[in-house]
Length: 106
Image 1 (cartoon, rainbow, N blue to C red):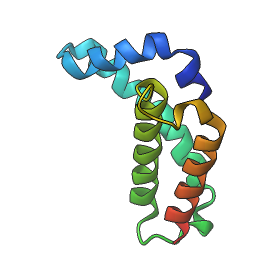
Image 2 (cartoon, one colour):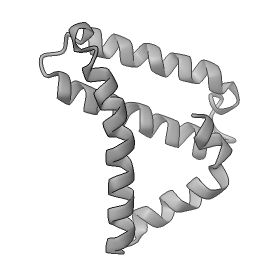
Image 3 (cartoon, helix red, strand yellow):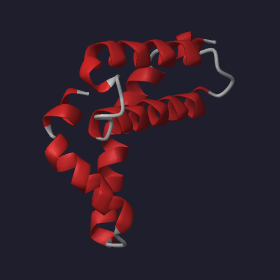
Image 4 (cartoon, one colour):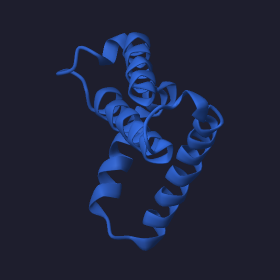
C-alpha cells in the first residue's frame, strides 16, 4: 500500500498504458513482476495453509491476492476524490487484511 501511494505518479499512468498496449516486452515484464510479487505472498500464505479452511487453498489465495491488489489499485491509485477510503490508508489496509483473513478461514 505504501508503494502504491509513494509511486502513484508513476503507477497510475503505467497501469493505464499496460491495459492499452499490445507490446509483448511490456506484457512480459508486467507478468513477471506480478508473478514474482504475488508468488512471494502466495508462498508466505501457503506456509500457513493449516489456517486456510477453503476447499482449495491455492485458488483461495489467488482470489485473495486479486481482491487485495485490485482494491488497493482502485482506492490508492484512482480513488480520490470519490473514495473516502484513500485518505484513511492504514484503516483501509486493516479492513482489507480482515476481509482476507475471514475469507481464507471461513
